[in-house]
Length: 102
View (cartoon, rainbow, N blue to C red):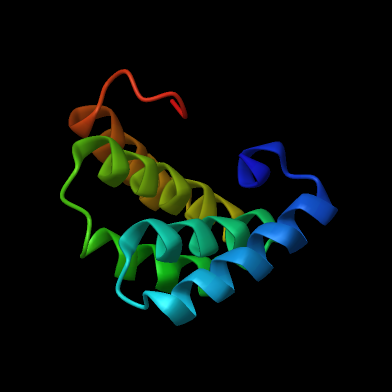
């Protein structure tokens, strides 16, 4: 929830917690994706994309994959890549049309 709210203090907290969680379970896709989303919210899209792609390769649940696609779309938009962002949003919609982030 801290990531969605976007408050700087909450983002710092989310980054700290996700960093600790990744140390404990480095292959756990939800924490990798959370940290990727935090970096996107902090306007560090390249780092966010790296982590989000890593999480995506580990996710099998459609809603988790769709959420990751949404964050990738936001990151690409931050970089000015509107066509790539649209592609990610389309993938999100195809994967989980009723996703809360849509």
